[in-house]
Every structure is written in structure tokens, then in C-alpha cells.
Length: 294
Length: 268
Image (cartoon, rainbow over all chains, first blue to last red):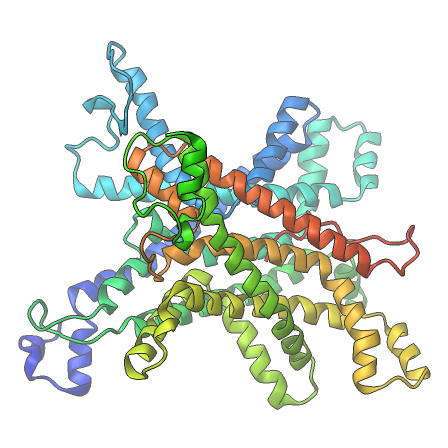
């Protein structure tokens, strides 16, 4: 990085540290913080969509649909999320490959499961074995995002289901009295009003989501935990220009601080948001704002 | 090999009794059930230890957070903030690294890096922080009348805490505390995937489930079995905690008892 970094063994103290912290691997480490933020930015809306679909399904008047929605939320919550992460990454991957296999190689006669192997034809592989490295990484990341969205969608469905029930019933009856169809009532009355009830649960969920992001490591993505382990491990002079002992504690301490910052910022944003959303609502917080204004 | 034989060989494999080698090929459904069930011993052990010690520590910590003295309150707040604000996964890695360096520099601490002690400590600290926050919230919502009545009767100090504050606090915190217990049991699945090494393939349920999934490349058998065991465990926790909760509420007029619903707060 810096010009004086060509021979690190001659460096001491701060200049050594400045060189050490700017090696190529450290740059990859810093970029992996971006991966975490990207994951959060993508997963949150997708999970919210899953949750919305789940909650709407659970409210449905058609029995099988509502059963589907309710069992979706119930199962995911009864089992550790880490188990789901480990399950879905393989299951989704095999599911996609199996579907492609059925479409692309219809005249393949052998079974897909042969003993302990899962065999699909070469054209059905995801991503294709000929595709470049970045495709493989992106596919792995996309699988991780989908897994997160499925698991957190179930949590979000639970929150939104509760929020939909919390909207005062009189509001819906009024809408009906004005001659709105049930679809209009849902989109124009229920959905706009439910957010203030959903917000505490969703903020809680956001916190859990933040705290679940290190599990990316288990899904095979080169995330911050991967790099912290890589960089923190003992390095001997034989393999690197920057030998050091076991620095795992420092690296993971750093990650701890990063996550503390992330959650503190989120908490502050949440406070603002709830103030904003309570405005004009028929809740205690909204009432307090009204009184303060007059 | 019959299923009875398999159960004899592997039922206590996770704590080191029975067959030394794990099954290598032709994994039967019976082997799946037995080994994953055997691993559940660890999950239950971690959960019970952490809840048992965490309960008392959390009560103390909640009182510390409620204290009027800044010197008592601030450390308690900081402790809760650190453990609730960061992922358990990272806490495990961090703790393992710290334990490792303690072990290397100070003799006599070699047990800290083993999962049964080290991970128990981390889980204990983690659940203490979460439970303390729950207890603190309950402490703040104790009906004012209860405390005034205590004052009127001249009940003070330790008696006031033991007879008035603590029972009310428990009663109010119980539904949320039940959720915390459920989540703690779920969190025990993290232990062997976060730094703490598995010794002689004696792992928890998730360790064996992922062992099977890796070997057979078929996730559709081991993970549903794992889910089955965890759902059983969750139901057991709900049942036991529900009994205790009922007992805590038994002095109230029964028609009025409205325990906050369990579903709504199943988050931490």
C-alpha cells in the first residue's frame, strides 16, 4: 500500500501496523463488512415481502391457504435458525438443480440420488462448471440471501399477522360501511394503519437479523467471520511477511464493536421512526404528541 | 444390525459411551434418530446450566440496573448492552480466543477451552443479559399499589424484596422469560459451530445432523429429525414454564388473569 512497505521485516511499531493493516487480505476483510451490509439491505425487504405474503396467507378465508401460512410461521419458529440455515442452503441448491435437471435433460434415465451422491446432468449444474469464479460466489450469496429471507420471513409474517389484527376493527367496519370491497379495505385501510403496530416487532426482528448475519460464515460465504479467522490465526514467518501470534481475540473483539455500533445506530433510527409513525395515530404515543403540540 | 443394537451403541455416544466409531456407510433411519437424539444431551445440558445459573445472576443484574447508585447501575447497563447488542456467534468466537490466550499464559485454566465449560460460561453470560433486561422491565411495571401496601404494612428491606417485589417481578416477567428459555435452547446449537472444538466427535444434535448431511449429501432426513427433537424440547419448555407460570399467578382472581400471549413476544 505505502511505499515504505516493501520490506516489512525492517519496520517497527506504528509504521509496521499501517503496512500490516493495508495488505491485500485486509482489504478483502474490509470489503467483507460491505457484504454484511449488502446482505442486510437485500434481505430486509425480501424477508418483509415473504412475511407479508405469509401473514396475508394466514389471514385467508380459504382454509388450505391459511393453514399453509400458519404452519410456515410455526415451524420456522420452533426450530433453531442455525439448523434452518444449514438445511436450506443444501436443500435449495439441490431443489434448483433437480428442477433444471428435469427440464434440461428429460431423457436421463439414472436416478438422481445414487447412494450417497446427488447426481444431475452437467447442463443442470448451478452454476455451470464452466462459469467464472464470481458466478459461483454470487450464486452462493444469493442462496444465503434466500435462506435468510425464508427464515426471517416467517418471523416477519408473525409480526405482521399480529399487526393486522391490532388495527381497530371499527376502522374496517367503517370502510365496509362506505362500500369498499374487501380488497380495497385491505390495501387502503388495513395496510397503511398496521405499520405502527408492526414497528416494535419489526425493529426487534431487524436486531435479530443483524445478529444473525455472522451465520453467513456457515453458509460458505467469505464474510467477516471468515476473514477474521483467516487473519487472526497464528502466522509464522515462513508463509507471510507479517508474522504474529494468535490475534483472534483482537479481530473478534473488533467484530464485536462493529456489531455493537450497528445495533446502537439501529436503535436510534428506530426511536425516530416510531416517533414519526405515531404521528396522528390513535395510540398513546400519538396522543402524547398531540397534547404536546397544543 | 438391529435398531436395539444401534440404540445400545450410540444412545450415549455424545458423552463418550458406546461404540467409538461413528457409522460409516448405509446410514439407517435408526442411526439418524439415535445419534441426533444422543447429541440432544448436550443441548439440554447447555440450556439447563445456563438457565439455572443465569436465573439468579439475572435477578441480581436487574436489581443492579434498577439501582439508584450510578456506580452500580452503569456497569450493569454496560454488561447488558454488550451482550444484547452483539451476536452470540461472535461472542462465542471472541470468548474462545480469549480463553485460549488465558489458557496459554496462566496454567490451571486449561478447561476453559472445552465446550462443556467454556461454552456454558458464554451461554450463561448471554442469557443473564437477556433475562436481566426482561426482569428489569418487569421490575419497572410492578403495580404501584403493591409497593405502597408494603410500605403501609411497614415491610422493608429484604422482606420487602422477598415477599413483594420478587414474586411480582417473576409473575410479570414469566411469559417473556419463557421465550428467552426457548431461544436459549435454540442457541445451544451454535456451540460446536463457533470456535469450540468437538472432542472425539462428541457433539450436539446439530453436529450429528450436519455429519449425516455431509456424508449422505441428503439434508432431507437428518434436519427434519433434528427439527422434531427441537420441537419436542420447545414443547417441554413451554409445558414446564407454563406450570410454573400458573403457580406464580395462582393468587390472582382467575377470571382476571390475562397472561400476555406467548406468541406475540417470541422474540429476543
